[in-house]
Image 1 (cartoon, rainbow, N blue to C red):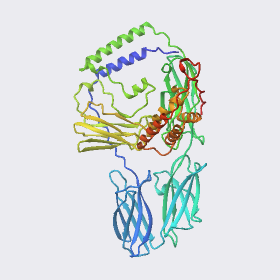
Image 2 (tube, one colour):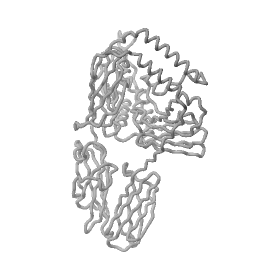
Image 3 (cartoon, rainbow, N blue to C red):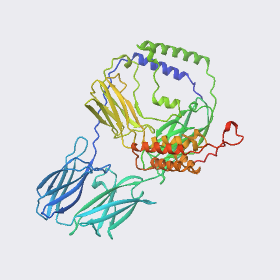
Image 4 (cartoon, one colour):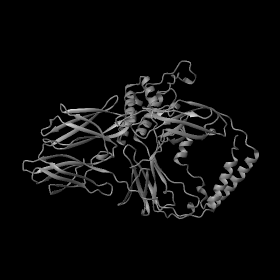
Length: 588
């Protein structure tokens, strides 16, 4: 049975307006401030003896998740009762010289942590410091089945030695005792290797591989780490409950996202696209399944093509688009005159109440938000920046008195939270900072009155700069800061050179980036456009996040491609001078 198209909505609108009119003003609740601290690890290097008889202890302080060195931090060392304090270099490495007798000694290396870094400790008993120092080096090479890890063991004088080395594997932030045994390789002659597959790593993703030599009668103990990334493609399916629906009914779309091994991929964004326009989006469940519901009238009437798009947030998962699914939407039915009169009366009452509550009538024409502008203009390119929260009806009548700034940082394209994004506010010599947590949320309280210059930044994304005025009426509580990925900005810049090469400009936004790149190449483009296509494709699909410093280079390459573009050939006899279009390529 079809539901009445307007009656429930009219009643809901009337109740909402009455609740907003009668509700008392409530003070804005301060959002909790979350401090995210990085997990650290001390990685010991070789212990060598100098000519003067002193022993040099070396190592590196690293971020356990990212594997990058932490410079400028204080590390305390104790060897055989002798103590030393040193500061890490820019890459996190450190060295300390201690006067101790030879033979087995207890070694203690300690980092006490800071406001943003967790502490780390290494305690070893009976370390024979007179043994020959040993260094392990790990290198990775991509192969068909996974990633090959090569292990090289060298000693004093950079001589390769033959030794059994134990390999373990685990998550990036796993402690040493949480790593699983992988294999034991012999560095003969000087090199041992193993191919790490998705099966050995228990699925795709980023893993940490550690090589350990426990020491023997000649060589000292040594360890080394490397990060491997096991990529996987995704496959998304799409199905609808009914292919013929009424204009007032809902359409239910379901499907599943799986990887190369046939396992469901959970917690990845899925969007439903209708003729290049995003209609709905959600996240897959733990089993990779998803379900989307939308009003049939939102896509128009007649035959419409639906397509599901999976856009993984992890670089080691590749995006995919489903096959097209067609639905037939019936024309809307005439609305009874009683519903029209009721809707007109309720609308008039809402308008009277709204204007009576405002002290500034000229503010009734609210500037549409960025999301609304993009919805009204599908061809508009998405952009980043600050999106203030929508003020309540009552808050617009108050004086500005809120001195806090809270909200969330998210991806301007995929609308996912961006953990680790840094927000910096400056006003004269005053500086306030916040780091987004796992949900992208941030909070800054107690800001002085005035205009603050704000900057939101995250590696791999375009930095956004904007101004906020303190105090405010609540529009900066629950605000949103959108950051545009650099790879999407480069692809947007590429549009000026690529669209003329497409069969129809309207296909931009309908075709996937892969389809665009393949079609441009099939057209045998001029050298500058061919080089530009290779450049954009590598930045778009590379596992390495491009830096925003590459944007000027992308602009220059697009300019070169446009300058060498030949004049368009006009087909004889074509109406209006229009040339024939090439055929549209099939789905990849």
